[in-house]
Length: 168
Image 1: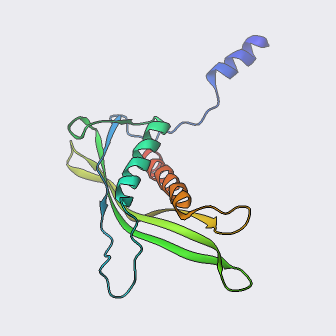
Image 2: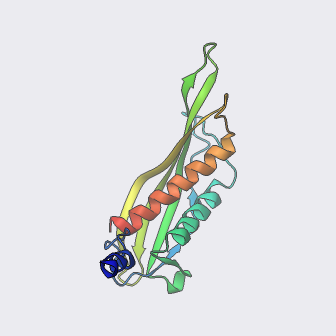
Image 3: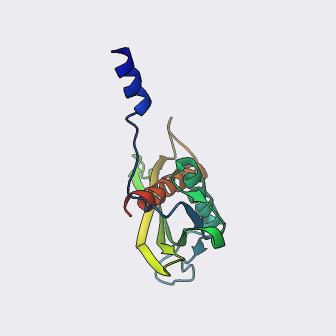
């Protein structure tokens, strides 16, 4: 009985994915580009300095944390992830009694393509993919917008990695 339990424990019941293509072991994440039209007359956009760099770093960090695909240089990678920052929104969700904003939602939207450099073809693309979070500006759960942006970036990085390794 002890051997059975020990062998079951050693075999594990951990999560794994078989969706990653057998030949794809490495990935290169191109630096994201900022494609938000800040000069648009129809809507006023919020500019967050170096947001595209923060997105690239969040995605790379999540791939490193996940471990299914190794980060490689562009000329050595089995797949290349290309991305563009297409929108950043901060929307009011909840107000106090005197009409001050109490809670916001931040949404960071990107356009993504996973490219196979050997076959010279797009493996998948997502024209509008996002990560988000909510945060309070008052009260015991209050946090700064920059802290909330970090949470949204982590959510986006997690979603990008999941999309890459699970929905292949």
